[in-house]
Length: 429
Image (cartoon, rainbow, N blue to C red):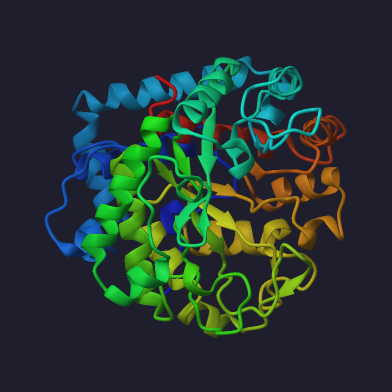
């Protein structure tokens, strides 16, 4: 597969015209799919369930220009204008501290006393009110039974000025925070099992049913699907979490799963860019390198992510991998060359870039919380997952913007993308 340059989709920061262009593109895509980005779409064949035919469904420059002319004469323009107005109003009304909170997604696994956090305790409530984060991620420590999960999520949302993204790792197989605890969600097999079947329709249906069950509990985001290509049988962290070793099939399966989740109202997160499938180490435990040259990466690792971008998937998660072919100094999560250069400018991705958990040793062994969040934002990340010290992270962002270390425009661009994601998901009216 050829990596297509960004063209009109290419941008380094999101200004007013660029944001309007992006919303228009998202709306055109939504209209073509007869529903919202996170809404109900009709699928007529297997190709639509998996990776779509780029000649008929990708929004290219000519197609976008034509759609713009049509929409300028339709009431749909009012929707774009209203979204722009709402997002601009929200961003302008936020203090610097509130903006910093809107790019952080912490985990609250335990209470101040060290017990499992099953109900919103005073300490966590105060942290939410202080930080006002973009969202939260729940883990097994937060999960006991169905009604408990629903009540916890409702309590979390009740403390949010801007509605929260509420996520969980529910890939299926060995990465199942909900199904493993007996919560009322479909217990999916590992992605590798789906990959062996070759049945993208079955993958779509699995994503749809899982998404419906997650939605009933109050979740609106799932940290799945995995787009890594499993080319290394000794890989300690991916293995059967991947749909397989064929990059094209992995792309089809991952997009199909994501489509099912989206049609149920759940935001999918495609991970782990630029590809964790051929590594010998685990980034949870330290630094990991992906030593391949660019030609190899383009022909294998990047293909599933390119398919996800072509399909309009809204969020991509980074990996804490050193990729010398693009950057000798920083892992992908902290690398401008990988996030802004490769993902944004070359591949043309305009959605939300989310970091993998910043409490993993590949990050914490080298950088403090404050250093890591500033480097990630400066590199092009929009949403910072699980900084070890969320309040320290918030304050570091505020200080960096105040002293000029991090441009205000970079923070605003990240906030706008997060708010647009929430608007597309129906969290912001």
